Image 1 (tube, rainbow, N blue to C red):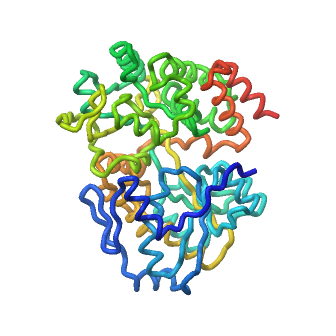
Image 2: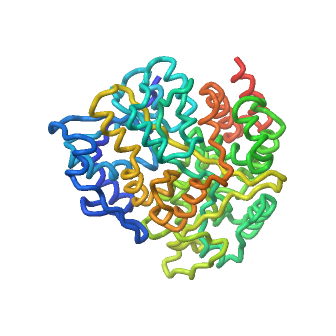
Image 3: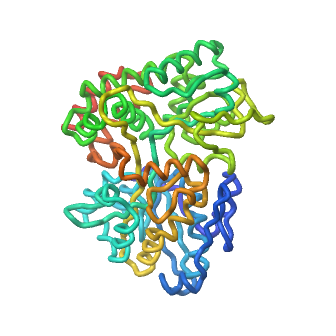
Amino acid sequence: MLSRLTGLRPLAVVATLALASASLVACSSASQQVGGVTASPASCAQLQEAYGSFPAGTTVRVATQAGSTEAASLDASLEHFSQCTGLSVVQVESDDVAASLKSDSTQADLAVLPEAGVLPELVDEGLVQPVPETVGANVELGWDRMWSEAGTVDGTLYAAPLTASLDSLVWYSPTAFSRLGYQVPQTWPELVALTSQVAQDHPDGSVTPWCLGLASPDAGEEWLAEAVLQLSGPVAYDQWATGKDSLDSVDADTALGELDSLLLADGHVPGGRQAAESATMQDAAAQLREGQCLMLYAPSSVEALFPVGSVSDDGASSQPEETASAAGAAGAGDVLSTFLTPSGGQDEETAYLVGASMLVSVSGSEAGEAVMAYLTSAQWARAYAALGTGGTAHHGVEAAQAGSPVAQQVSQILQSRQSVLRLEVADVATPERVTALREALTAWASGQADGATALSRAEESSAQ
């Protein structure tokens, strides 16, 4: 059942307000710009020729995940298209997109799935359509096979990759690190040592090592997936994530034990375990900006939550000047950067955890297919990247067009065929397995079960 339906988001109307309130980049019919990179949109005549012209009031409803950090950027990216084609594109938010499709509560034409693991079930129930030929061609041109395979069921492409994120990132303030004398960790043991040092240096809890928001059910799962990947390597991760190994495997149990001491020890997150349970990603990002904590594990897409111009290049090799506007005991300033989650030193290649949102056709309407074709085009990918959305895996976007220096580096990793990438658990596991894991990790985070017990319960539940 759908637990909450937050309602409609008229894209062309909400975009301006959402951008202003979130301090995102301004959007106009002339250009879109972030970090000095400008993406000039096609003319109305070009858009009408490519996607058609529709009677005023023609509406396309898009089911999306409530609370997504990408919602405002999606609004803005469609504003010019909507004005030119006459299509009124409306986001319908829900807590569970797949459940909303099953109940038809959103009456959607299209849907953005936050995780690909639910796709086979939706296909089996006849709730989504194979992608149109134009969309399939767009995907083949723009995305590497790994991404299209995530949207393929029994040899047929049902879901087109819409956005991609690099999850293996830790956000931090180089200014704060420099002021406090900390170095960016290069290995997992160094990350553990830095965490302990920050806690020791601030026994009053005025500054904590980590910003942590566990209110979203997938937050703990992503942390655990990252720890398994970095501590045990991609081969072990594949076995665990896809169900060839049990949820309570030795690798998972070891990883969760590491996370328990890294994140949930006293003084390691603002307000302690209880506060982290109710904190959202938005809350954690705000805590980082305010200097309450020094590090935030979050995907590249979280850049949309930060003010334009506040994200710089990798601080591992640069030390920005301290800013006069620095706030908080840690002295967190206006400039944020990232470092890649360090590995535990296994002999395998360093791998990165990635995520993707997938676009599916529900109604098969002509108007819906026109919007889907635009959303899978290189033209849209460039416009979306220019909004400061944290990088892209789409080969139609050059890394230099991705906005901030961090987004450019993220794009290079996502687009490189030399990168060792692994999709999140929710993109490769069955919904039942994902639900069991998330419920168990919620119990672990709240202190109702230790790590071993929580994972054992998850395995038992998923096997039923």
